[in-house]
Image 1 (cartoon, rainbow, N blue to C red):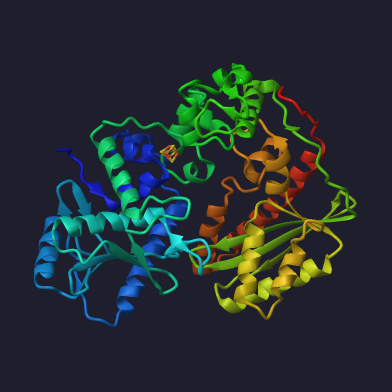
Image 2 (image 1 turned 60 degrees about the vertical axis):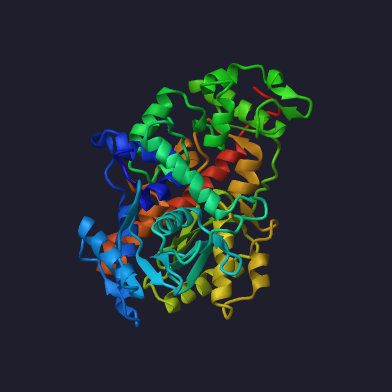
Length: 501
Ligand code: SF4
């Protein structure tokens, strides 16, 4: 019997990174980074939202939130025996599983578990959403406990989400058309992995992932280790699964770079499971570039058409996903590629209200339509996705066709997907705008610039009305726009190298 119980938050973290579960359990806590302000905000908002939902509940329920540990569990079991219709903040455990679902609801046949989440209950579009893995494994744990205690109403659970919807998680369903494994099987795989980690039967390793690691409290120690080991995940687009597949052949970036690429290729395939020919060629060239150390220089893999325009606009938006509120549309306008002509224009939805959001969106659309002859540059599909969403939310501002016209390739270029990923190589560990613009010498005025930090500042601006915070948000967005320009100029100067170095 392991000395640790498997909890829902363990499974949630494990879905993002298995090493996180190992470090959280066995790591040296003194090495942990300070909690990230954005993550703290997420927790605070989550707790506040849960309280709001519970206060507005019109159906009677048993509130166990003031109890802890064994006392909470004793009262939960008692309530289940008495067939209480709704239990808030209960606790149940069986064998090595421990769950504290926000809700336990008596559905006649037995109990189903639910959580209250201050985000969307599904991922993807609202009409075609699918369950989130992180939520599914948590709900799976609660359902498993209910089953083992013989009081489950069936293999399903629910989320009450930020949109006021109840999202049903059906565990017998396959995860998707391409993933026939059911949600229940996923839960069991993740639970088993957690058990193996906690019993130290499975050795975990850090794997660099820009989006996940930068928000993790083990970021610094993990990065130091990965750098010391020259870990393959420090190559852009080479994540844990590709690293693990490659590791049977190479343990470091340098080993991989020094290998004879031909020895990895067999006809139109490679000998590495799950990695195709084009991918291995790209990753091998990347490993060689990174291994060149101080001599490494970025380059173009192919010629790319980036014609000079008299007028260019560099565009970046800021969105608070916790409020589902697009609060800032920033533009840097430049003429004849002369930096002295640069001008920053921003449309700021300062209040977190639909009216303010709609007004700022309308102003930004008007601005872009007035600059129909400028070439617009942005970084990642996010801007286009959010503009499509805003158009659906505020159809009076413009039509869906207007949005598609604004983002036509002839007049708007996604520097990330259309240029950086498609045609460039950089001796960096990821291709975020921060990493690449910093590589090119650009410095943000803020000492801790990040999209997550900006969301936290926006939250504090709304709470306090502090003008210093307001300016910090604007400066950060302006710098993001300038960074996009710096990157474009840098790419224009890159040499072309068509074969492996
Ligand atoms: S920093 Fe990254 S690799 Fe390390 S535990 Fe966190 S998520 Fe995992």
